[in-house]
Length: 110
Length: 109
Image (cartoon, rainbow over all chains, first blue to last red; front, side, top):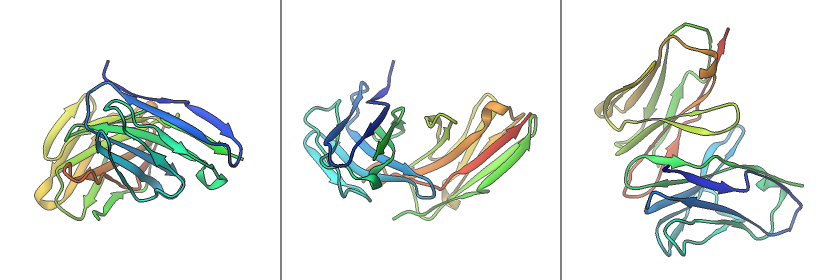
């Protein structure tokens, strides 16, 4: 089954404790992207990748890092999480067409 | 960047009613999708429709690219249709996918 998977689905952590949210797709898509969704602000792009080893900033990249060492994986790294990074995070992938979204990761930073 | 406006922002319907959701966008696009975000937060692909008309059961969508708008039709609405409907547009050669603010639909039994 074609899908985008994210882990973990839910995470509660404390300020400053490094964390990684994994994202994987099995559709051989070139494009991958991370979004965050916040009440009143909608979905905003954090980072995107057009292919392996090619990444670029989206609208709200501060406080996040990404890497794209393999085509299928696009992890989101929070080196020192802060409470303002509490949000619902979505990973997505595309092959010059429709975008497919993962199930979301609900992150709470206390 | 591309601006995306959705209307109405909120919509309350009685079960069985029909509705039309609108998405206006400010520039030419190669990609337009409609999503349904269910109460559990998942984004469900409804239509990939950069132009033309598509139908899937009780849902259909039409995009008039030259006039920069898309419409999502929901017929015979059910309580399970409740949630937020998003329109997203973009250019596939620059990866700039922009979401509208969404239409929150509530279907009452």
